[in-house]
Image (cartoon, rainbow, N blue to C red; front, side, top):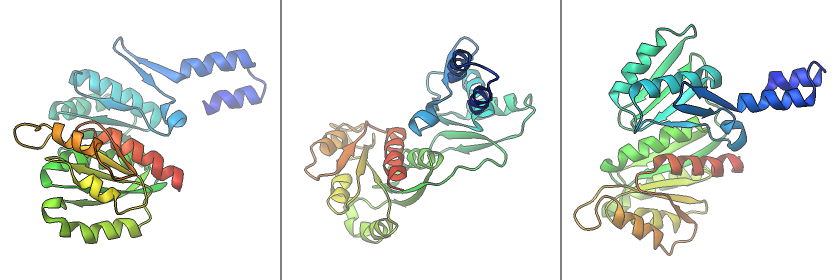
Amino acid sequence: MEEILKRFASGKIDIKEACRELKRESVRRVKDFARIDMNRLYRTSIPEIIFAEGKSSVEVADIALALASTENFALISRTRENDVAEIKKHLKDQKEEFEIRYNAVARTIIVKKYGYEFKKTGKIGLIAAGTADMPVAEEARVVAEVCGCEVIKAYDVGIAGIHRLVEPLEEIINANVGAIIVVAGMEGALPAVVASLVNVPVIGVPTSVGYGLGGKGVAALISMLQSCSPGLAVVNIDNGVGAATFAAKCACRKE
């Protein structure tokens, strides 16, 4: 995009040709199964995130390498170990050097050029009620960091032992965060508690952790939606990506 604008500014191309080139650059086709939104990061401040579920490992690798080659990195969610192996296989044919960061708990993969670093422009807090909620919390952490956030986290501080929350929440508040993500399963009460104690937006993430009727995150979702604590927004069940991107927009805007 910058190169096209420079050629237009110098008079090498006219405005019609610049518009045509910019339109071509905005979408990159990957074979016959994907169209990458190349300008999403600049347009929304959130990069395109590849969702691996429903795609073959070959498709995931093709899309990831196409995106990373142009944008310096690619972030993939809901991955499998086979995806890592396929990406490594694809990298053997690349002239540029890339590194792979695989988080098995979060089920995320980051493919990035060596030396590329994510700029930190904001801070968020991240709280998980129980250890069983960590996969969703870790997904949120990885995504938030890619989106430019420093993440201050505290895990296993749910309401069954509410005294555990005091110290980490104080640390998060003192860090002047722009938003706090709270991940909870079972009855999903923790986000409402946190929202009643802080002066920044709280994003509740219900997880599919629980027993019997209302399990699989349904009870937690309904509980969060019914909360009377002001300043609490709620994303869908297990949606760490949605929580992280919303929190990043809050935090980076504040900074």
